[in-house]
Length: 189
Image (cartoon, rainbow, N blue to C red; front, side):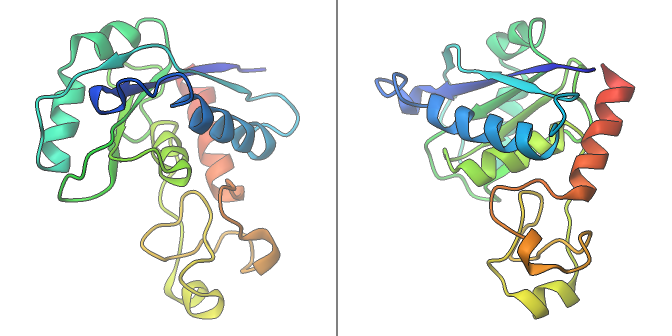
């Protein structure tokens, strides 16, 4: 049985909102994870929301991610948590989020989201824990741009569940992602 601990950190753009945020996002992501990745309790995650950091007004996703990676508070938190996800409230160009894939338990197990979108936070956390993007053109054509799971992206839905539309729902980690995450946890933790 492997249990893992992650941390969601808000930036200064959420100053004053920390009573409810990022707790709501963390609770929803933790629930989806424990339902899908750890249905038997073998790979449970606990997501904490402790503190915040300040960024120096990044204008691009790359700048924001670099600042997160060089932040002393983030580095310190990685000594206590298996992964850290920083959630911001500013528009940056170049994408909505970024994470180092498969780095859980390492000193660079971090990610960044430019909003508190629950699907985005779950997606970037999935990357840190080893999940890759899922999807293919056939599935997207069959089920539409908005039928995707956590690791689908850009309107591309996962194909790993036999294109079963009943299994493709928002805020769900599908079989492919679950297997990748479990394998990464087994290897890294």
